Image (tube, rainbow, N blue to C red; front, side):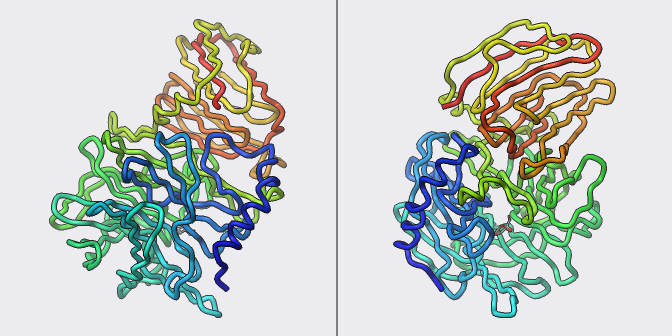
Length: 477
Ligand code: FRU
């Protein structure tokens, strides 16, 4: 049964107090007003404002028939809620207006999304659909523009559309009938008629090997002279510190031959090392920056996060600028986040040896920046709150993030990666989220953390020696 908009607003209003009374509610992240949020969708700058849409099930804190929720901003940090852009109310999208993207063409906003359809026996169909808006707020659905081609299953979704040289391109996440994940490509002259060109890259292709049974949410863009294909493969097994979450997200960097639609690329690199990062999408802003948002979730569905008691779950990451430097992708929190800074604490040349607490360095909604000026120790640890911990050892070069379980109920669990030399750490904490940028964004750890929400303590310690740091800390408001 399709519910109407009045019922939806009633539900938001009815639950507002319960949602907002959650001590784990975030302060500077995009969250659902009620219900479940997942992927960022349709990131775009249109008519002077930033638009972020998101996968939204307003009716429960579980996956289901998704809407496109919508937020608008002048500056990427203060967000205003807009009416839901798309509801699952047509035969071709009745079980969900799934993920997709947006482009501006002839002063109109074109959004492409996947219409998800299931019958009583749970058989799936999928359609790539178009909806158009004049004002960026109200959308007119135009229906399917692409049907699943031969050789593919109905796991065919998440259109990302972009313009290159003289035509439109669409990359899509796909599964072949042999159950291999691929990113396939279409072209168009008018955004309505699309021509299929097959896979650009996929599991089983030369240089990749077996690499997952389905790829979700691809994105393809140029940055610093490279072509970057972002994809979210499902079905990879853990390898050392890599691929530890249920699903992965990362990128292949190389060069796309747009004439022959082939891609010469380096191996897959994970975008984030934390517990909760998935389905990122990017956009270019008017100054040419490539900006990424990810879904700050990736937990298995059986995990019940404590926010569920307050009728909401999941959030998006902070916006990050992508930079290509020295053969890798860096992620840097966008500069506009500086607008949120208040009450600066600035400590120069602090000698850390043994256990140390820094005056004024505490809180739950904060940014903390540490520059390592000199390293003469075996290990350095930052304890945040009661149970969250960051640890670096210089003999093995292992950087570790630890938290008390996906639901805040333990046991302790960790994510790790190799960091050759630790130069700086930048931490964004927002009550129940933590985004840690290491060495100017070479590595990022994004996680939800359900620690004691009242405990704003931060404690530092070293093993076998001293570390000299410069620290700056801000409250974010
Ligand atoms: C990724 C994803 C997409 C799909 C959407 C549905 O998290 O599974 O592939 O379009 O979520 O909400």
